Length: 128
Image (tube, rainbow, N blue to C red; front, top):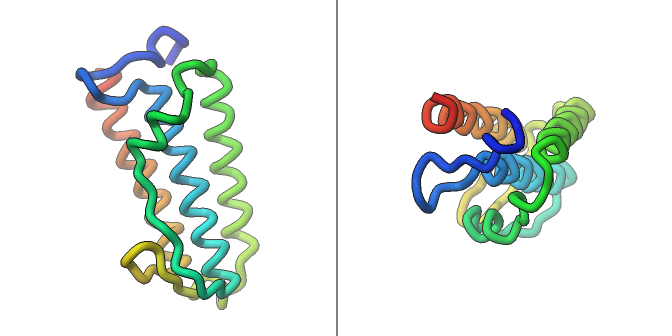
């Protein structure tokens, strides 16, 4: 994907590739924070987030494609390191986000599945 292609939208009112990857970065960080809070047995109920608002406010289209791609890999590596640092107790911890009770291990799998879901969309709708 080059700079020009990174600005592609597959339909009107859909995210550009830059915005899609920024969404992955934002979600990686939010799920990581939730996992960290739950692993540390924080009793607070964490709020939900509006992914479209985050995308609208991200300024992704004003950044270089190279920088966004690099940031994704850094955020992913940071999450991997965090999960690898957790004990079995931490990985089995649960917490509440919005109206849902969710476990740390579940969030780890959801994070991977979320990226895979959007990579499928990227391949099928943006790059085909």
